Length: 163
Image (cartoon, rainbow, N blue to C red; front, top):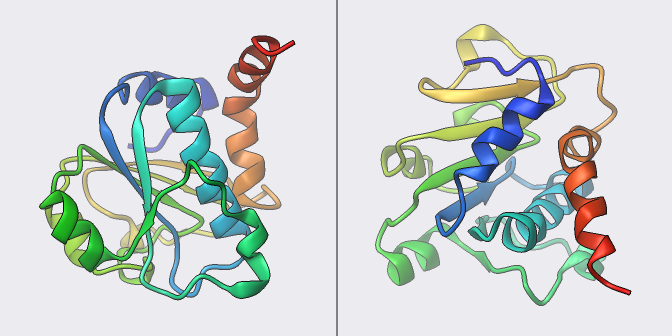
């Protein structure tokens, strides 16, 4: 399903409370993919009480190590499978809409029921992942901007809790 309004994503995210959520981005991730994945992972944990983790098989780029937050868990696909035995409730694919370009073994799509894809790249209909929800905007500067659209209100509420 193509999601047209950002508030529809919040309805999806509300259902992720206490769920194990895997977040992936594209192979050889760049600043947009990694920063968005890390920020989204933190927000899912803090704002929605989900159990998110990032799965990536590429080495983490050393020039982006400043992005890593202590509450963000990052696993390779093999590490994830060894530790959690394929137990993923939901998959979120960021900055990538093609199954063949994710930065982990594509078998991850065989062990999930549902995925949410958030991407700002021009999309070809034949590249879409079946049974996934899509929030796409080829006019957005980056995926982080797209996430800011639907997380902004929730983040502001979260910040108000701290004096």
